Image (cartoon, rainbow, N blue to C red):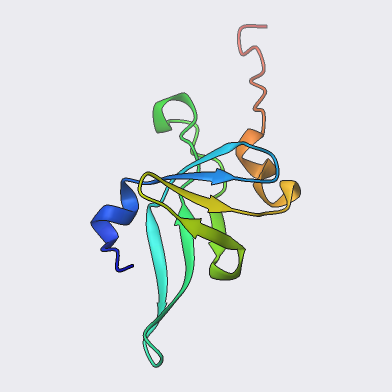
Length: 96
C-alpha cells in the first residue's frame, strides 16, 4: 500500500500494548540515500495555549509500527517512551 504524507497525517496513531491514543503524525524523518522512512514524529501537546511551551515530541521508529490501516496506525511502543506526553506542570502562586 502506498500512502502520501497528507494521508498519513489524517490517521490516528494508537499504541496496541496500552490502547492509548498517541495523536496524529506531524513530521517524518527520511533517509535520503535509501529513500526509506526512519521515523514518524508526533509533536508534544501545547500547554496553556502554547504560552507555557509544550510537552516533548514522541518519535516513533518504523520498527515499532505494526500496521498502517485505513483510519489508524497501530504501533507497539514501550509505555515509558510515551509517558512524556502526560507530564504535569505546577504553577506557583505569584500573589503571595
